[in-house]
Amino acid sequence: MIYREAKTTDIPQIQIVRHTVKENTLSNPALVTDADCEAFITQRGKGWVCEVDDEIVGFSIVDLQDNNIWALFLRPKFEGKGIGKELHRLMMDWYFSQTKETVWLGTAPNTKAEKFYELQGWKHVGMVNKGEVKFEMSYEDWVR
Image (cartoon, rainbow, N blue to C red; front, side, top):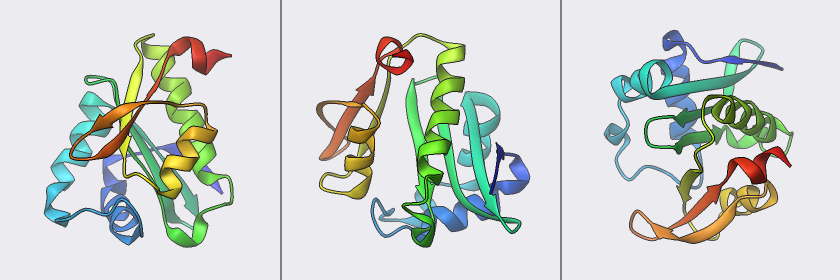
């Protein structure tokens, strides 16, 4: 497995990963465009990918402008192998090296993602985006 920063040339494979997930699916795949991905990994924040045999199997993207986790997704057959945890760590370490602002995310309730974020120490703070669970992580909680 290779972990590295995402590049604009990764966007086609990032989109494939995003569209193969079984939970937190997009109601309309056109909602997240290649231009959106490019903006988030080059201007608004940064992204990371995990490659296995030259194929991207997971990615994470953080938005520094809105202090938000924009994406963390894995191909389903690669879940449970520590890839999400490492993509999360890379993203969070970079985020808190840039700012001490609390970061937030939203995810569908009663999903593997919700359990994942709870296990990583995120705090449930309410609801957002039409019924998603809202989590927050402070700098102090991350660096412990």
